Structures are given as structure tokens and as C-alpha cells.
Length: 225
Image (cartoon, rainbow, N blue to C red):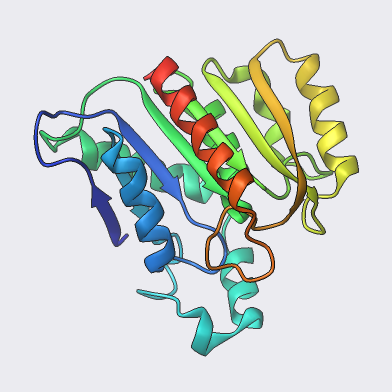
């Protein structure tokens, strides 16, 4: 599982944050975002979640149909297995601090971060789904079904208009979480569409909301890690 690891050079060890990619895969845009998070004082791991199928995915040459094939090849359980491997790797690196860690998943990885928070409640103290898909659906592995197992803080940053995460799903999620007893926040970002945090997502990037999402993440990680 080829993985970008980034952290400050000095004064470690640093808390671990798992940065889970969106469907277009690892690319310089995500590398820059992971580096920004790292410079705030974290040991950030950005894995290629498509490693079982190919070393790197290039959206520009492969296209959306192949992207969806790769995306649909993943399950919440598979990615939780990958997260276990990432945690084992970090445990052997002196730059990574032991104990509680954070996680953030974008788009297709929103449910992965959600599932991981429930699968590793003793380790993941702060997890976020940013315009995540399939968070509360009629499926046996829908992550909302195990939400009550989460012990850390959970944040959901959602676009106002999102064809991949419709408002009814977000409302159903909020209703379910309200009865779960966990520490969570669901936030709708006005005037945004799916992908609003990505600077190179033409026609979708919403700078003010993207900066606010960074504020939310950093405040949560500062509280919890």
C-alpha cells in the first residue's frame, strides 16, 4: 500500500492522522493538502487505497468509468484492514506518537473514516467525513449502523447541494446520530457543491468554505489528540 507520509522535521513525535483520498485518487492536490495538515504538527499518512488494483491512478488518462470501477471495488471492511496496517506502520516510526490518532475521509472515503472510528474506538479519537457519500444507506455495511461504538469525536462537513450525498441522507444520518449518544457534529456549508474543498475542482471549489473546513479539522484535532 504505497503511502505518502509527511510530518514536521523537528520536535516530534507527532499525533498520527490518516488522510483518506477521494475517488480520483492520490495526486499533487491531495499531497499539498496532506502537507498542509502535517505542517500544523501532525504525522499524516495518505495511502493509495487502490493499491490492490494498480500502483497509481491517473484520472486524466483513465477517465470516470475506470475511477468508478476502482471506487466500487472497496468496502468499509477492506479499508479498515488497511487502516490497521497503517497504524502498525506508524507504531514502528519514531516520528509518530503513540496513542490516540485522527482520521479524515473525503467523498468516497467519508464512510471509511466513519467506519474506522467505530472499528477502532480505543485509537481513533477524532474522525471527519468531508462531503462523504453512503454514510446512512440501506445496506448491511452502512457505517451508521455501528455509530454507537464510536468513543471519539465525529464531524460531518456536508455540501448544501450534493448529488452523491443527498440532503435526505444527511437528515436521516443526523436523526440516527441524535439517538446514538455519541459526540458528533453535522454541518452544512451554504452555497457549496460536492468537492468544494479541492482547490483544483473547477466550478466546485468554494474558498471560504474550504478554509472553514480546515478550521474545523484543526480545532477538532487540537481538542482530541
